[in-house]
Length: 431
Image 1 (cartoon, rainbow, N blue to C red):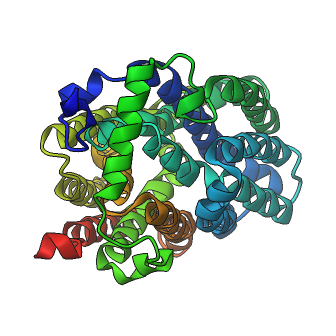
Image 2 (cartoon, rainbow, N blue to C red):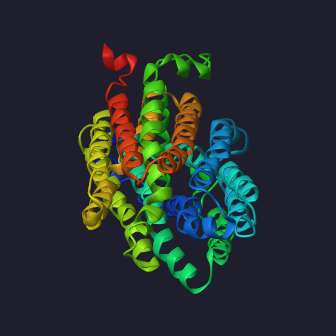
Image 3 (cartoon, rainbow, N blue to C red):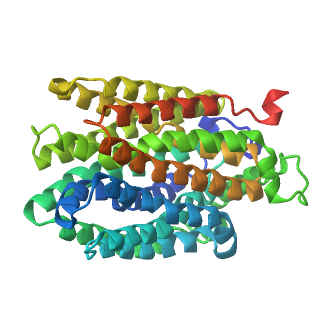
């Protein structure tokens, strides 16, 4: 029994403890993240139709895509405080209600400014979800299994991105973009009830968790926190003295420029080929997210199996993503199917860094510091990427004959992001 209490126990030992966590906690947080991401990215399918009906320029469309980041960054930065004050469980439930409402309101917008405002509200509502869930998982899963748990949870985002394409395309082809946005916001309200039913208030209240497993998990988590050498009086804002936090923020933000730039504009890029139907565009725009699911699953398991190494497992795929996008930018227009194939391939490495940098933060910092660190890296990184990515593509496209330079700039940003993550050693790792 002593091995199960060791915070350094291996992935095989950890997997034998409290297996119901993987069947109850993980599917629930997975679906929440899937719904939030779905309601975030479905605007991409609506954008060509919305632009035509509301008379939007490409720059205005870019502002709509980027405006989500303003609200998202603000509440992400507050997420650590909100999670400590209200608890992650209650915080995520409130987010479900609010982002479902904001998603539906987008379908009633009639002007550029109304769409812009509602997208900011959607960002405010979704902001605490990622940091809040990161903290919740750190309270339920031990270090040896955390990379895998974060990886499975993060599969929700690419699944939401994939489903948003064909489902939104099908609704638009039969109705219009307004009906699509309203119908796709409603599931968040329904799932809020399931959330409260599925997520216990704490380990102690989980009736489906055997007492010996509960004790082993609690003991291991306590020992993990005790292993951090900083005194309890050490202020949380000392996270800013750790260069790795800043470098991971920069790396995450630069990769997110590519992520959200291509997520918003990919259907529009494909529509510019003049060869594809709405259904085909929806399918191909969603396909990279399927690849992202495979990539996240692969890299998180590999990271856990290789001594919980996170830094290089996140950095190398991010640099590869940037290189592939740079190549895709120079594919000639008649070979659009080759460009589509590269977009789909990019999906495999695109989101590999997501579970690794945030699980890494919960491992290099005590939980009381990891909470604000996750909120800071996620909040600032998303502000950089979600605002600049869509706007950058829209602005560069407005002064260019095609999307070549826009895609190239996205590729360069992601490559530099991978470099930043690669050099993000902690003080302990440098000694």
